[in-house]
Every structure is written in structure tokens, then in C-alpha cells.
Amino acid sequence: KQEVTQIPAALSVPEGENLVLNCSFTDSAIYNLQWFRQDPGKGLTSLLLIQSSQREQTSGRLNASLDKSSGRSTLYIAASQPGDSATYLCAVTSGSRLTFGEGTQLTVNP
Amino acid sequence: EAQVTQNPRYLITVTGKKLTVTCSQNMNHEYMSWYRQDPGLGLRQIYYSMNVEVTDKGDVPEGYKVSRKEKRNFPLILESPSPNQTSLYFCASSLGGLLYNEQFFGPGTRLTVL
Image 1 (cartoon, each protein chain N blue to C red):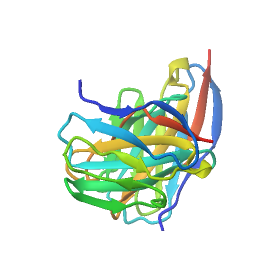
Image 2 (image 1 turned 180 degrees about the vertical axis):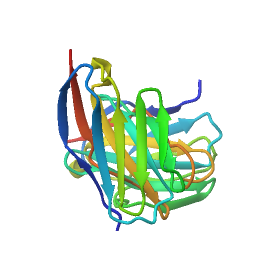
Image 3 (image 1 turned 90 degrees about the horizontal axis):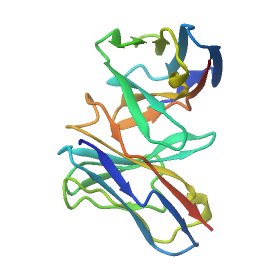
Image 4 (image 1 turned 120 degrees about the vertical axis):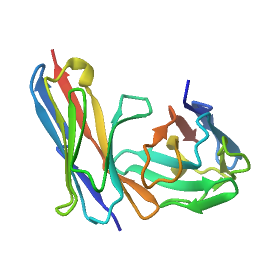
């Protein structure tokens, strides 16, 4: 059974800092990995989707990498802003299922 | 605007009273699914549907039913809700199947069963 772990569970940084969120998964037989953002009391917003054949994806200040063989992905956020404060979730597709990690709660302090 | 909508957004009910949470998408997506989110357990899949009249169980299907009579709608039915079904529920959809495509989520339905 696929298991997804995100470290750290919470992170607090000053504005302007570059940061890395980590995601690991136990079964490397995945089709893709997706990073989401969740604001308190809100739904999930898709940030980046990486197919299993890809190594990274970029969108603005966000860069996600995927190392399928080692079961790891990172989300890099450059020049963080208070508006980036949210919970970040990674999810992997394997078989017919989408399995989520529990998320990293990010706080960016002005 | 392309979106996934859920209704109601908030619901308080009592044990045993049947309820339905609706989900609708306007993107002509084939794949739709339901998740529940609980503290310490994360998001877990309840049911999914690959297309009209095709549904299958996810990781936590007990106590839930679904139907997919139309492509755009995927209601979640709780025939006899219990307090352990108190949770935040999300509907999601994607073009084609789950394998290659981005998932779009609804805003969530917060359900409390007393």
C-alpha cells in the first residue's frame, strides 16, 4: 500500500527566504505526483503536476522535482511572501488511487 | 468559469438521517472522486468514478454510496450517517483518467453528525 510522508509538518520562515518542502513515497511505481495548496477552510488548489517521466516542473516562484527511484519529491519556493502561508500537500497517483501526504503547514512572517 | 461545485458547504445533522452531498463539474471531465479529510489522517479517497455508470470503492467506502448517472454530477449519499462520519468532504474531477491529468477540487463540505 502506498504511503506518502511530508516533512516537516510545520515550518515558519521570515519573508523573502527560499525554502524547500519534502515529500516521500514508499512505492516508486507512480504515474505522477501533484503538489497542492490548501488555505484554511478552503479546497485544494493544484500547483504543479509532474509526470513519472519528468524530473521537474516550474511555475513562477515554485519549482517541484521528482526522483522516482528514491521515492522523493521536493517543492522549492523562492523569495517567500506572507501570501504563501498555507498548507502544502503532495499526492501520488499509483494504480487507480491518489494518495495524499498529511501536508506541511507553512507560515511566512512579514 | 471552470469549476467543481459542492452543496451544501456546511451541514449539521443527526445520526441516522439520510443525506446527500451534491457535486457538479462543468469541465466535461470523465473522472470524479470523493475524499474525506480528517486531522491526523489526511485526505482519504471514499469512491471514484471513471465515467458514467462506472464507480468503484476507494480506501474508506464503508457507510457511503455514490451514483454517476450523468457525466457532470457525482453525488455522495450517506444512508444512515453516524458521528464518525463527521469530517470535511471534497469532490474532485479530472479530464480523462487519474493517470496523467491534474485534479480539480471543489471547495469542500463540512459535515457534522450529532
